[in-house]
Length: 104
Image 1 (cartoon, helix red, strand yellow):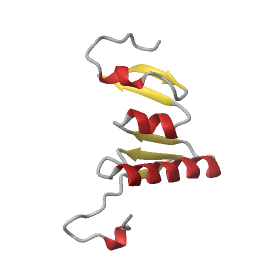
Image 2 (cartoon, one colour):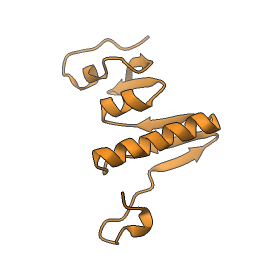
Image 3 (spheres, helix red, strand yellow):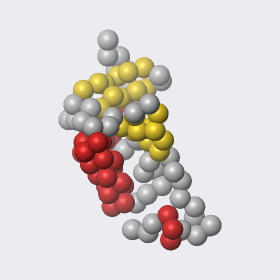
Image 4 (spheres, helix red, strand yellow):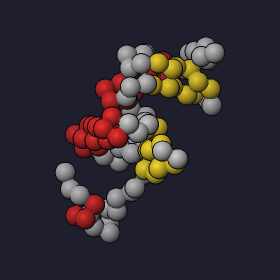
């Protein structure tokens, strides 16, 4: 995988991560990456979170990646929490048009 230093001005790297009061925020950190690089980046984020005991809030649109790397998954649709729990939830329901009852 190329590093940010290897990128040209034609393909700049985004830095979609920030830290706010002890929480690492990652807004679609792998949206422009290939599958192998996505796995690597999320693996690094998970390792960092566990090693530093740092919560990571990541916005992802790849349910399988979230399932493999998250300790907790919160699924939102239309601003409502529809799923909240450990990996293994049926996160694909978030992408189906059928109505899912919000988590109370």
